[in-house]
Image 1 (cartoon, rainbow, N blue to C red):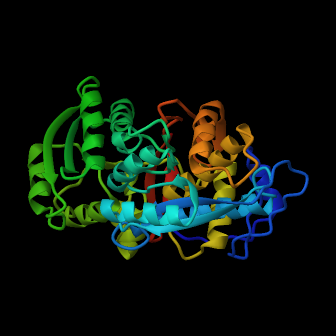
Image 2 (tube, rainbow, N blue to C red):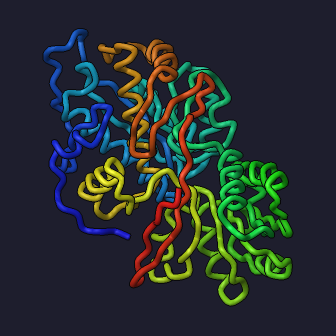
Length: 402
């Protein structure tokens, strides 16, 4: 999936972004000399915290979020910061574990964190959001999509869709655009992300003429052998397989379904990244449908500019919607800080939170993942996208369908 790109000029990237997106710092180092001249207030350095899995089975998500956020921070600092304030990203590894995520949160507070971009995955986000609500710490998760990720307090916002919303989008898209009416589902009953998507899917399916002919579950303790679930789907007469979980397990399902199932596969945003994890077996993902607000192969101006900048700075790291969501998160914070006229990095985290949670409902971000507004509930208002994996000459790309 990785392509070679020419170095992107800073002025080109700035032209592509509509919320003051500046050119990226291509030397791979954090810009620390952002100017404070000409701005009121005392400036200073404001620490943005980030939490996600940068090791372990979900590392592809966390590394992408860390990189996407860092790219935005470096661009903003290179362009003079936010109202004269320099941004600094501190990122903690939670290994997709709720307890470790709370430990990372407390460690980041010790490092002076004033707001949090995170966490990356849903279960850790649910745990950390409760702590952030107690502290009145502003939280903007790029990808924590379970409903309870942002229900702990009015300090919590998200960039991505909720799990039930993903499910409803999927059901509507299948009903309106595909001939398949009989749906088989394999899902992780031990994971709130997976069960949330299934809930949203089922609610819409029954109103749109879709019949769920087989529904098979697995748990975190048994997620390597899917032979029983696949056979049940095959015997059901399903015309499409819905996989609402993460790419690691989905890759196993696709491999184990070879020769047993020959029906289209549709997944949530957790399948973003399946191209990379399959490696030389990527052919088996050809035609898989994925919901994602970003595709590296998209020719759309903002998306293409971000893709070039990211691959120039992190040529060997995963590039997916999680990176794009994190990048947009930092720019949303920038826009909210500007709206709230935050000019002094010494502001307390709680006071900053009070300013940002009001400002977030007053801004609109025209970002890489589309135009986004936020309700007071913290939920985003944005248009969904459906992508299709297309494999050519052993390489996979995403075709944007909506």
